[in-house]
Length: 145
Image (tube, rainbow, N blue to C red; front, side, top):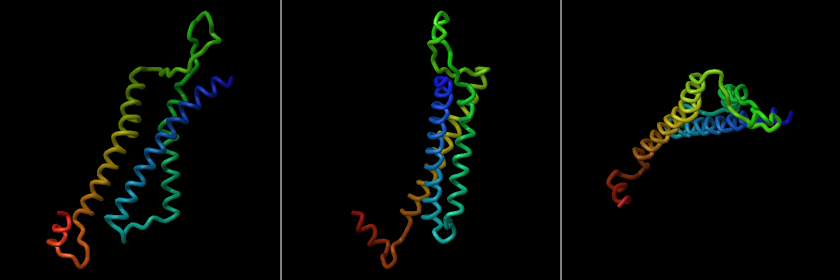
Protein backbone atom coordinates (compact mmCIF):
# COMPACT_ATOMS: atom_id res chain seq x y z
CA UNK A 1 0.00 0.00 0.00
CA UNK A 2 2.79 2.44 0.86
CA UNK A 3 4.53 1.52 -2.40
CA UNK A 4 1.58 2.74 -4.49
CA UNK A 5 1.36 5.98 -2.51
CA UNK A 6 5.10 6.63 -2.73
CA UNK A 7 5.13 5.81 -6.44
CA UNK A 8 2.45 8.41 -7.13
CA UNK A 9 3.56 11.07 -4.67
CA UNK A 10 7.36 11.12 -5.03
CA UNK A 11 7.42 11.74 -8.77
CA UNK A 12 4.54 14.20 -8.54
CA UNK A 13 6.01 16.21 -5.65
CA UNK A 14 9.41 16.23 -7.32
CA UNK A 15 7.85 17.71 -10.46
CA UNK A 16 5.85 20.24 -8.42
CA UNK A 17 8.94 21.42 -6.54
CA UNK A 18 11.00 21.78 -9.74
CA UNK A 19 8.21 23.69 -11.48
CA UNK A 20 7.64 25.95 -8.47
CA UNK A 21 11.37 26.66 -8.23
CA UNK A 22 11.63 27.56 -11.90
CA UNK A 23 8.57 29.78 -11.78
CA UNK A 24 9.82 31.47 -8.62
CA UNK A 25 13.06 32.32 -10.43
CA UNK A 26 11.00 33.77 -13.29
CA UNK A 27 8.99 35.89 -10.84
CA UNK A 28 12.18 37.12 -9.15
CA UNK A 29 13.75 38.08 -12.48
CA UNK A 30 10.61 39.96 -13.56
CA UNK A 31 10.50 41.73 -10.19
CA UNK A 32 14.18 42.74 -10.47
CA UNK A 33 13.66 43.94 -14.05
CA UNK A 34 10.70 46.09 -13.05
CA UNK A 35 12.48 47.43 -9.96
CA UNK A 36 15.57 48.46 -11.92
CA UNK A 37 14.05 49.59 -15.22
CA UNK A 38 10.84 51.16 -13.86
CA UNK A 39 11.61 51.96 -10.21
CA UNK A 40 8.79 54.46 -9.64
CA UNK A 41 6.05 52.74 -11.62
CA UNK A 42 6.08 49.19 -10.29
CA UNK A 43 5.97 48.77 -6.55
CA UNK A 44 5.53 45.21 -5.29
CA UNK A 45 2.96 45.01 -2.52
CA UNK A 46 2.52 42.19 -0.05
CA UNK A 47 -0.87 41.43 -1.57
CA UNK A 48 0.57 41.15 -5.09
CA UNK A 49 3.44 38.99 -3.81
CA UNK A 50 0.95 36.61 -2.19
CA UNK A 51 -1.07 36.42 -5.40
CA UNK A 52 2.03 35.64 -7.43
CA UNK A 53 3.04 32.89 -4.99
CA UNK A 54 -0.44 31.34 -5.18
CA UNK A 55 -0.38 31.43 -9.00
CA UNK A 56 3.08 29.82 -9.04
CA UNK A 57 1.99 26.95 -6.78
CA UNK A 58 -1.37 26.37 -8.48
CA UNK A 59 0.34 26.32 -11.88
CA UNK A 60 2.99 23.91 -10.56
CA UNK A 61 0.41 21.60 -8.98
CA UNK A 62 -1.62 21.49 -12.20
CA UNK A 63 1.13 21.18 -14.79
CA UNK A 64 2.63 18.11 -13.09
CA UNK A 65 -0.71 16.41 -12.44
CA UNK A 66 -0.18 13.87 -15.26
CA UNK A 67 2.75 12.44 -13.32
CA UNK A 68 0.43 11.59 -10.43
CA UNK A 69 -1.99 10.02 -12.89
CA UNK A 70 0.39 7.98 -15.06
CA UNK A 71 2.93 6.58 -12.61
CA UNK A 72 2.01 3.03 -11.60
CA UNK A 73 3.54 0.05 -9.85
CA UNK A 74 4.28 -2.68 -12.37
CA UNK A 75 5.72 -6.13 -11.65
CA UNK A 76 9.31 -6.60 -12.77
CA UNK A 77 8.74 -10.27 -13.53
CA UNK A 78 5.32 -11.87 -14.10
CA UNK A 79 6.36 -14.88 -11.99
CA UNK A 80 6.91 -12.63 -8.94
CA UNK A 81 4.12 -10.03 -8.97
CA UNK A 82 4.94 -8.86 -5.44
CA UNK A 83 8.22 -7.30 -6.68
CA UNK A 84 7.21 -4.09 -8.41
CA UNK A 85 8.82 -1.06 -9.96
CA UNK A 86 7.37 2.43 -10.24
CA UNK A 87 6.96 3.12 -13.96
CA UNK A 88 5.45 5.89 -16.04
CA UNK A 89 2.85 4.42 -18.37
CA UNK A 90 0.71 6.67 -20.55
CA UNK A 91 -2.40 5.49 -22.41
CA UNK A 92 -0.94 6.77 -25.71
CA UNK A 93 2.66 7.44 -26.67
CA UNK A 94 1.61 10.58 -28.56
CA UNK A 95 0.10 12.13 -25.43
CA UNK A 96 3.30 11.41 -23.50
CA UNK A 97 5.42 13.05 -26.21
CA UNK A 98 3.08 16.04 -26.43
CA UNK A 99 3.10 16.50 -22.65
CA UNK A 100 6.88 16.26 -22.51
CA UNK A 101 7.40 18.75 -25.34
CA UNK A 102 4.76 21.30 -24.35
CA UNK A 103 4.61 21.10 -20.55
CA UNK A 104 8.09 20.02 -19.56
CA UNK A 105 10.31 21.38 -22.30
CA UNK A 106 8.23 24.38 -23.36
CA UNK A 107 6.57 25.69 -20.20
CA UNK A 108 9.10 24.54 -17.61
CA UNK A 109 12.35 25.16 -19.50
CA UNK A 110 12.29 27.16 -22.75
CA UNK A 111 9.71 29.81 -21.81
CA UNK A 112 11.26 30.48 -18.36
CA UNK A 113 14.73 30.56 -19.94
CA UNK A 114 13.59 33.15 -22.49
CA UNK A 115 11.80 35.30 -19.88
CA UNK A 116 14.72 35.23 -17.44
CA UNK A 117 17.20 35.97 -20.24
CA UNK A 118 15.15 38.89 -21.54
CA UNK A 119 14.79 40.34 -18.04
CA UNK A 120 18.50 40.21 -17.28
CA UNK A 121 19.47 41.48 -20.74
CA UNK A 122 17.09 44.39 -20.14
CA UNK A 123 18.71 45.02 -16.75
CA UNK A 124 22.17 44.86 -18.31
CA UNK A 125 21.19 47.37 -21.02
CA UNK A 126 19.67 49.71 -18.42
CA UNK A 127 22.76 49.55 -16.20
CA UNK A 128 25.16 50.07 -19.13
CA UNK A 129 23.23 53.13 -20.33
CA UNK A 130 22.88 54.76 -16.94
CA UNK A 131 24.67 57.97 -16.15
CA UNK A 132 25.95 58.81 -12.73
CA UNK A 133 24.87 62.31 -11.62
CA UNK A 134 27.71 64.85 -11.76
CA UNK A 135 29.85 62.73 -14.04
CA UNK A 136 30.53 63.37 -17.73
CA UNK A 137 30.61 60.61 -20.29
CA UNK A 138 34.33 61.09 -20.91
CA UNK A 139 35.10 60.64 -17.23
CA UNK A 140 33.10 57.41 -17.15
CA UNK A 141 35.10 56.06 -20.11
CA UNK A 142 38.38 57.02 -18.41
CA UNK A 143 37.39 55.12 -15.27
CA UNK A 144 36.76 51.95 -17.26
CA UNK A 145 40.33 51.94 -18.67
